[in-house]
Length: 147
Image 1 (cartoon, rainbow, N blue to C red):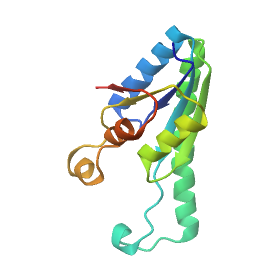
Image 2: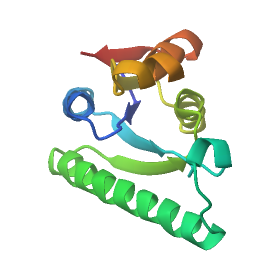
Image 3: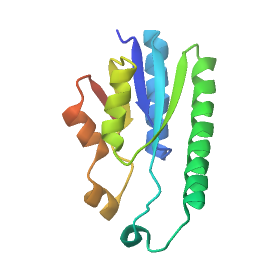
């Protein structure tokens, strides 16, 4: 049925359930998986960040975020491969989460995107909008949303 599945994760408990479901589906379909975590760029504007941070510190912080994300994805990769699923991981640096997920799905010729219904809560979600809703609206491939 599916040949390559993109699984999006942000590390939240609901996202972890989506990862579990995506890996199970991939094992059933004998599909390969691309697991993606999008890490934000460090806020560099004075108005957004509230203080000055040197470029070296910004790079160090962003590198730590990428390293931490990659460690999480390595754990997911090991879990998938223990189930016989071929797993590729991708950490992407961007503030445009939905667009990045859609682009990665196209780049890897994925025929399904699996993601949680939400990650952020409260005012932050209201101000930023729903990444899942954006993916649902703009993706050209099916999207499986888990709640």
